[in-house]
Amino acid sequence: MSKRIRKAVFPVAGLGTRFLPATKAVPKEMLTVVDRPVLQHVVDEAREAGIEHFIFVTGRNKAVIEDHFDISYELEDTLRRRGKTKELEALAADLPPAGATSFTRQQAPLGLGHAVWCARDIVGDEPFAVLLPDMVTLPNGAKKTRCLAQAVAAYQTHGGNIIAVEEVPPEETHQYGVVAVGKDYGDSFEIAGMVEKPPRGTAPSNLMISGRYILQPEIFSILEKGEKGAGGEIQLTDGMVALQAAQSFHGVRFDGRTYDTGSKLGFLAANIAFGLARPDIADGLRAELKKLL
Ligand code: UTP
Image: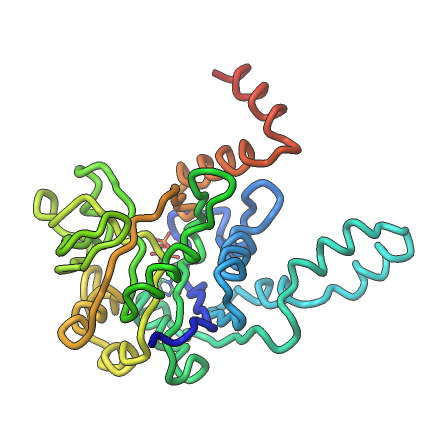
């Protein structure tokens, strides 16, 4: 029987070069979608999926992330003295319990595969989730769960390794990791192959790897070899291709949409989509958009 997924890795050590100058001094994961940092949205998604331990792989200039997941004593004291109970409760609700976060450093940005490998000792010998912290997800329909919970449900059915995927226009597949579809169950399918950033016109499908994974710990001994792939980086996709020789991989078609907040357009689209999903501002935002368009 599959083990429960208790731990999640958030690789937050990238440089965010696509979003300069905003990311010169502020980590891209701390830019806001509506009124929450991008990373808080992703941690919310992990908590919804039952994650109990949050492992952040950070780098230089990312100390503010550690502060965000801690008590802010002066702020909370001031809120308390001013009787701002609602704000205090909201801050407390966002905070993972004491001891439920770990921080480790990726000393040089050698690639996503290397960042995940940096978490090996904290994860230990159990299956775990990986969430790309610049990708935020919104389900189709308010009652549906977000992407990681859908991946965990697929894991309960199939076990092994699970990768969330989403359709992209065929002319964009060269920018992403892409999967080949084997036996198809509808919402999920056997993954017949994977490739990172396939040259134009060679992708095996239009299903991109969208940034939510459930992986078995055997991935670490593969990533340890440090083999470089696309862009000269140690790619997680290449590690998964190697692991596929020994273990099963299933894809789950996320019933919703993923926004890449690491790109300018994705960031703006995420703010509009999340704003329209918020009852307190949706009407006002719609009116503003009408004026602009
Ligand atoms: P990206 O390639 O989207 O992030 O990696 P980046 O390198 O920060 O962005 P650009 O292209 O320069 O704008 C996907 C995720 O993997 C993390 C990033 O922080 C991001 O969340 N990552 C990537 C690492 O933690 N370490 C790395 O060496 C590379």
